[in-house]
Image 1 (cartoon, rainbow, N blue to C red):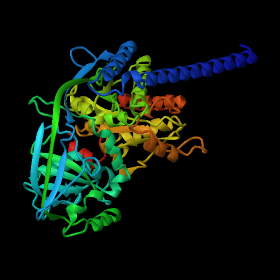
Image 2: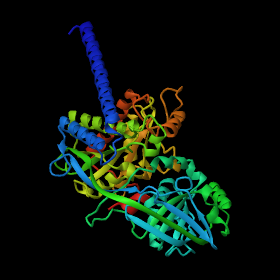
Image 3: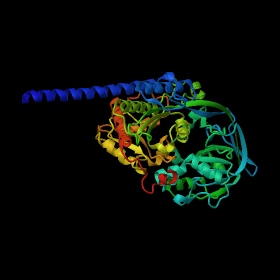
Image 4: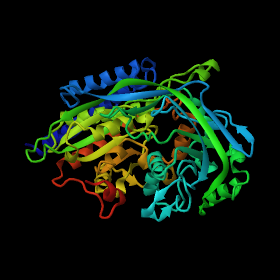
Length: 545
């Protein structure tokens, strides 16, 4: 071929290849936009588990899996794994809390001064008991911390500060500071009630006033084969939260002033534990209802006869928090639907397009499971049910990648993979991101305990190396203030009706995030060795099978 003709043909090939890539990326962006716009539409009424809107969303995801040619991997040759749930609502006016000492009685005001969630274990509960202050309520001999040493909690209500000591390692501390671990410690020491004190430090993460929006929201938990809600301790008769501004009556005549304890909490100094004078009376009534809400599960079979029986799992929670409670409607709020465009229509959409990219390419050596889980907003309920009742053997799951609320609002320059430092998955994420010119950033919010707050953690608790992938704080446009964007979203839109389609979602960033996410799965699925926990890692040590 003549040299000039060869160069001309080469240029045409380069141009056509580039055009095809651009067209492919545009198509990906359009598909992502279509998913988010459907899942965050008012029609779905905020995707509350057990409601029609969530079921519409689940059917939509299943139909997408079917179009891609993915196999059903739920129950009974369907895409659905029905999760049996108990739903509990707090009866209006039934929550009461009263302090009494030396004949003096101090009643507290619900929501203004104290808060109670509906009880999943009792339809009616009442107790009057003494109280002990147990610091943070943490029993962690592994970290040389024992809040219950020197106090007797048997038959009493345990009062503890929210959170954990400053000097705890972030993610190990998050484990011990989780509600489940604190309740386990209280039960182990004989407590019959728990009362968490919401401190100024806790307010930096969650403002007390936001509890008003949770008054009418149900609690949910999955029902085990014994007909009990998994993880509920029936020994704990009543639990609640107490605003530090309302705790004065409790701490009168206490061995240490509340002001001093709060100062120690802020400074990272040790807290003193002690028994209170007086008693607390707490009661409430809850209504219970049994419902079902599906996880949606699809399978892409692997191609390697030796590795196809091992699985890489992608998860994204499909549910959101539904509609605002009755008080907000009465106050005349125009928009009462929590659409959850970024939390988590965005994550589900990325997972769907990750599945499509896999389905259109060469089959990976290992199999891939795609799981849209229910009831994440109720305490990682759907993912816990799947992790404890998987539709494939749990020891065949080699890794899990979770997608929850990626903030697709700017052209990101790095990603965060919560949990990356605990297993070899961290190296995989870094290499996959770097192949797109993107860095891997460390956890920028260690005080937020994010590692234990999304669905990947339920797989960690079953010994599966897992990461939770989100966009990072770096922008490729130096003029973009990403900290301001993060802060504004969390303050103005997170778990509010304004997390909707009016947000300036960057679909080019969404497409790039999807391709990085796909690359991570490709690398894990095709690597001969399965991912492993780091030598001596805390979570690998306590959870690995």
